Amino acid sequence: MEESKASGDFQYLSGFGNHLSSEALVGALPADQNSPLICPYGLYAEQISGTSFTTPRSHNLFSWFYRIKPSVTHEPFKARVPSNERLLSEFSQSNSTTNPTQLRWKPVEIPDSPTDFIDGLFTVCGSGSSFMRHGYAIHMYTANKSMDKCAFCNADGDFLIVPQQGSLVITTECGRLKVSPGEIAILPQGFRFTVNLPDGPSRGYVGEIFGTHFRLPDLGPIGANGLASPRDFLVPTAWYEDKFNPGYTIVQKFGGELFVAVQDFSPFNVVAWHGNYVPYKYDLNKFCPYNTVLFDHSDPSINTVLTAPSDKPGVALLDFVIFPPRWLVAEHTFRPPYYHRNCMSEFMGLVYGGYEAKVDGFLPGGASLHNCMTPHGPDTKSYEATIARGNNVGPSKITETMAFMFESCLIPRITPWALQSPFLDHDYYQCWIGLRSHFNQKSEVPNLQNNGE
Image (cartoon, rainbow, N blue to C red; front, side):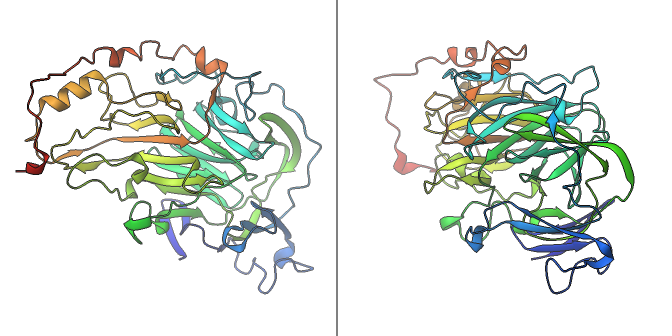
């Protein structure tokens, strides 16, 4: 499936995982081969590989760029000064800690001093190692300044960016993406990109995975349709700059550290490209949710948008799950999420609106972490309000909300600055303290056979 779509000044191709092609100048793509002796318009051919050469074809990811100057044309990398000490890609006892307590953070304030996307990134938690090519990191960002005369390149893994406040215009080597709150962007490992802020200050979340890539989840008995449709994923069309730009800086994240290399041209000089290793975006409002239609509450996995699977079937290195507007119709059922202890670890964020299981305290721009086997569930107010409605409540619709969850089989270690943050909600545990016993030995046992009558 390959379809051109326009959104304002931005042009997109549609389809997830397709081999696509795009050219900003007609005829810029070589017709019969990838690397001719002389490319059209005198361009350089350059390949970017997201998997090993010998990865099975069904999972092999690569693209060919046809660019004005190759990306190798730069001065040696040097350690960036100042660095961003709040970024981690290696998680160990020396730089992070474990904590089974339920944790919640209030929305982080936008800084007063000029801060771009690179310096506004900070790691909350993560597990594993980018060097070992296994694991993930969860970051948040606040920015009030567009990136100027520099591009960012993440050599550690893929970024899944979830803006919560303020749109982002992300220029990549494949073209430009505009990503607004309610949408997500995926920037694969190794791509160079810059982030501009067309609406002013921005804030959001970033999930990063090492050694693998996001894919659509299998639908199993759901069938061929539902959840996120492949055609709704949008890939930018070719767009290029051709200008002398002395002092342009490439900032490369490598092992969680930042390095810089100077060159005299824009890295966004790709006139044409083809392949299946590309940045893309997705509008979460296009997600087709599924839910229980008679009784009980579905597992949250039914709302998975993208997954990065582990080597163990059915177990995710990192799932991206959303809780969008949807109808609740289950009868004789406690409709909010059930109380739960999970072998997986769950990091939640809220883009806008409220979350059905937390009446107070969980705010847009905030976050929570429920680690492996740590109990969690609805707060006292949500529980009491739900059972007070009784069994005769009719269908109801959750509206104007967009919450999400990063869920992983790996136990995250938490960064010291996240635990020391002034935005850490030290009273989070209080939301459950009011839960009281409703036990009554003499109460009548519900007759579930009369459910719905």
